[in-house]
Image (cartoon, rainbow, N blue to C red; front, side, top):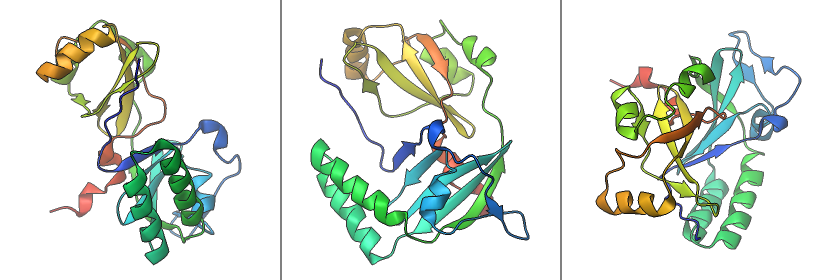
Length: 212
């Protein structure tokens, strides 16, 4: 079965926990992380967000999450635009994003802001098993406008609440999911499992305190 993916405007990335640096990062007088370049910062990051003019990553420390960003220079902008043009071609897009990532790693890293929060415990997430997406949304979760189906016919979704994004698998078949997709109504789909695997909600990448 063909794998279908609908992309968000901004590209979110999740880094494997195995890649997290084991040594503590340096800090300045204010206690904010300091890195030699963006590549070093990514060694401590759990996830990242690529926008059209900057790249933001989230670096965890206990219950605090630091937003670290790099702003594109002209070369980074050109590499980003090249990737955007090739996004429909998987092989070429993979090469393009690799070039973009490698170059961004050489750029300066700067502290942006931070937030303090904890993801919902697995015990609490397990209580949602068997509930419908409608019920989950009534409990404050936001359903993301994309889906990702695998060859095994398992339908994967994502729900967000607060600063965190949770991975969800559904009980229904891909065929039933497609029926819901055509009707643009997913309310009756039921949750088979729900976990936090290190992903963050889009809001986690933006400091709302600066917004009026």
